[in-house]
Length: 357
Image 1 (cartoon, rainbow, N blue to C red):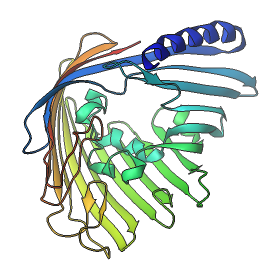
Image 2 (cartoon, rainbow, N blue to C red; image 1 turned 90 degrees about the vertical axis):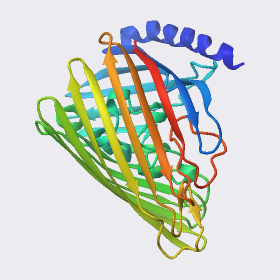
Image 3 (cartoon, rainbow, N blue to C red; image 1 turned 120 degrees about the horizontal axis):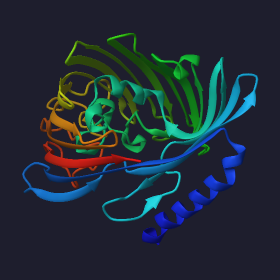
């Protein structure tokens, strides 16, 4: 079933593109294939070699002029498992909305504003994907079920500031409900401002009963970057707080990154540090990779190189390691190592190729 899904979807989208062309001001079929070869291990276990698909996708987006400076816009983006076949229709950012000089409103399924800060300090040269994803410890991953904050929210409505359609500003406010009957909802606000060589980001997010009734979580993060001629330096700080059945659980995180622009290629290096879990929760209480008590800190190391072969194609290589203390269990946010025990230290070498179309 999965192997037949993607070709069928391509045909449907091509038919839709042809049928809708006369009705829209713009209509684009686009996508990305991003595959890499990895050698990974999770601690004492031996090395495993694998081929991984990293946020491979295809989509259809378009807009239509409504007059008076307003336009309708939409996007349907689907995930593709390029290494094993199959995919998920509308499994990535999918929405419809209206925008104008006052800003924009959209509704659907898409990432929260919290994710925007990752672009300030994160590994953008390698497309913030693969095991090199810098959301692995920052944000506590991207899975809401295990306490991650930069996730895609279902049933979401977002207002984007007018500047999101102008150079330099990208921010907004988003609300969402999980519609589970337990009064679960989410509020996320913030964004990124890019004046000249500077880039400044700030976000706040509150999750009400998303991990379970009465379990309310919050986080905020600040990031700052500055680019000289061939060097860009960035830093990030974050605090996360969770409700647990035994009390609150929280931790701080800070990180620094450097990007060196060497001709067409880019070198990237990152170091991040998560503190021990603290708060009123019982010792050993855990949410995602974070646990309460001593010996629960972690460090995140990464280095990579990306080289563009053309405007659409690039190759990259890198190394990453999450150095968990004995009771911490942070894992790769993308393509996690299986069966990672507390104290495991996931690491890996990666070499890949990305092509946009």
